[in-house]
Image (cartoon, rainbow, N blue to C red; front, side, top):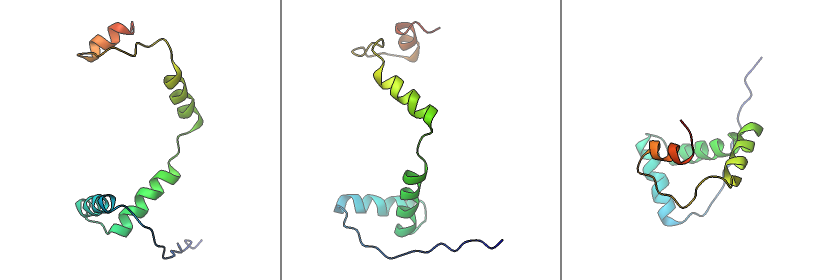
Length: 86
């Protein structure tokens, strides 16, 4: 079975200047081309969608009404005490 060739097409995008500089800096930090870096970031976003269980857990966490919301905790232990988690 032969590997399928990946077809790439040239495209043009307009980015904010500050975003483009950050992308260039991140690409250089990873020793990659700007094109390769942007393509990998986009592939990660497109192909790594959370599964149904993760989406349900996120939804549940975002809609919980029984967690204290106005508290600021000095430590994880303080947070667990407020949530009655031992």
